[in-house]
Length: 277
Image 1 (cartoon, one colour):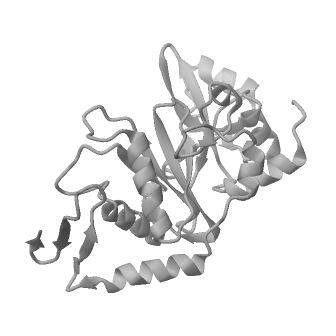
Image 2 (cartoon, rainbow, N blue to C red):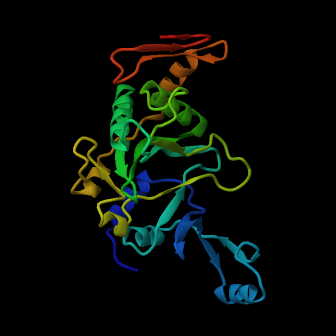
Image 3 (spheres, rainbow, N blue to C red):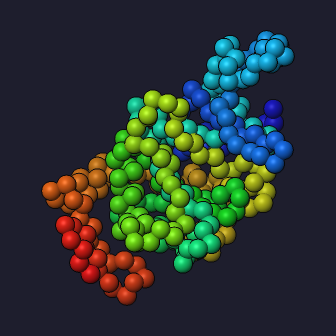
């Protein structure tokens, strides 16, 4: 295993926190790719099981691998690509991420929409940070918390801000916005929820992807570790204030959304029991 600075591993772990009892690894085979949970198992026993027609899915003697420092280093040095399950067992998370993928039919580029979203987050006093995705054709906007926070609350906050910024709308489906991580308020009881690929994977980073970038210039920060060390994490008390403000704006079960949509020449849209423009 390559040697990697302990301090950099510590910085990485303090920010990118998800489930530690299980994580995913990326696989590629014959033009296909995906993620699957990492397992600890006896390979001799599994080989016998496979020779008799069994598969990993029905192999009974396996258990989830824990996300150790060594596996994080394996990701950072390019030996594998690790995906983090973001939703903890208590339905909370340490961060929330808005995922933007390039959509050719969108009126704006994913870059423009990321900038609009980040500016809207700033208006709500939520520091937000842009990572260019592994493919280079999209971005992840990260917001980190100073403690784990209920996913149903953080998701409601971010969905509200996406609407406030005019990025998602019942009238326009052609947005580059794709989803949130975590993508569920609560565990369904099946599976482990969605996962996000961790940043700074060496092979992607060498192509100037999977790294944090300046949303204005779209250039990557020269010292990613110094950048990460200075990231501001939102106090959960601040999240509570925003959540309660949004909740209090709901009347008779109808969400009231009143704001000036950026880039729309001051048009004001009020959604209540009726639509006023």
